[in-house]
Length: 166
Length: 166
Image (cartoon, rainbow over all chains, first blue to last red; front, side, top):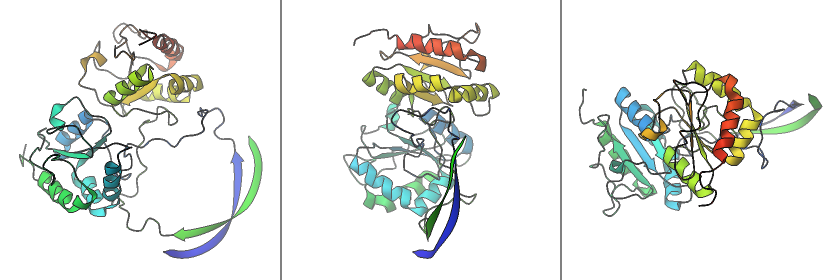
């Protein structure tokens, strides 16, 4: 909605503030984000090891999102997940989050194979919650954009920790 | 240097484009970058697995930087590395780069222990270049800000691949 249209006089001072800084031949790049589009306001772990450490120390479940930039199913899921307020708020407040475009060496993160998109929950006890699955028998940890309600329900399951007190 | 001062008329249309987007209670955050301050113009791998894959497929050595946000030695090294044009250009053009604040499960990346800052080179053949060391006998892969020339020399060593043709 257009709330107001107004004009301003701006004095732009062209200061060569970037003098001396390295700029690639192909031009200045936008710094890569760790969110990779799954929620710029969330605090993302960089690696599985980092995610596990945060999960244990803060006693919050870890959600691992496997995806690929050139996979249309991943992109479609990313769009709805990043735009859903309830999911974003719940992830921010109650979860440790990690998104990966490469598989880890830990086989527990691919209980029924390596495919994308795939969402695996891990309890703060470092136990992979293989019991928290989507609706597809052949790819148990896959979600489609229409599965957002199931994903939210699964997030609630993951929040019920295996041990309520450590 | 001020090259030009000019003014423009800008029509700003205040569109409530952020309506409905999730904003944390503590206020809007700046998205995290994968560079973590080591060079916003470089293309960083997220994980060691990703770095190894790129290194193999592009036949470029991988440079892994271990550091910590609350380590003054890491911060001091980061400042000089990120501000040195020759290092940044060489890393961008000839290397795959990865910076990590958590250790990996691969013991080969800590030949003489886990400490920061620590710089390990990996050949595209996936061989850790334990032979490329800094100047400190007890922490062979540590560098100080005054060691930039040695770091550049070591980068040149790493560019001489173990197998020139795969």
